[in-house]
Image (cartoon, rainbow, N blue to C red; front, side, top):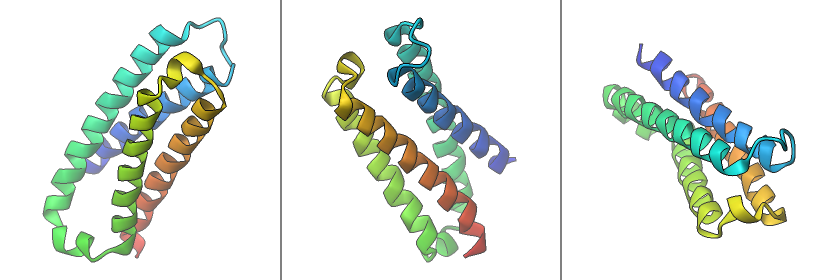
Length: 126
């Protein structure tokens, strides 16, 4: 059941980040960015909370094995990088500017989270 909750959290996180990214890239231009960002970022934060809580609970059941797993380590590093990227995105006011750097940071964010997802799936096979 924890894995289901974990995947639900990841889906909420990644799905809403991609929704915001698509809007910043110009699709759905009729939707105002600010209200969409409030909604999608709130849902993404809820997804992260679900994924982090369930992930910590799963970690507690196999901590020794996971700490020895290089893919798990890569996943944790990627999550840290995604968090730093999100901090930079918001610190520079990228939602307001929506410039090339904002778009590059959004693409980097989606790439990092997709790599996190990939590592999560590989953990059991390494």
